[in-house]
Image (cartoon, rainbow, N blue to C red; front, side, top):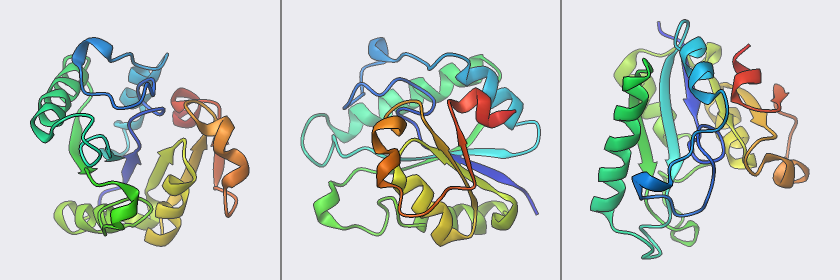
Length: 171
């Protein structure tokens, strides 16, 4: 069985500027690419992201797809292989099964990639990333980067680890 890391996108890998869909606005967090390279030595990498900008009309689905392709290809050029990106495009109020903190995408990846979830991790800067990990039976790493410091007081349970940023989490 394979081990995996399920990564939040905005605030974890790249700066969270809100409704990100333009390639020219992409800014990777310091040392995030190096962190991903370290993680992929022992784990398959996946991104699970809520992108409600589509659901609220800030950008279109095709703009999200174009940006995602750019994002993944940029990482690939730096030697980082993301196995798959899972994305919920709905707003929170729609209460869809694909929206974090639901473990829906972890379960989907588990079946498709023969994953050992008990030895896998969810890393992110929001409490819903930690809740998703707990529901799926994965380990959790909460990042103080992105919105982590702001949301730390909202954690409903203690994550397995707390790190300043993705690079520190990868060590």
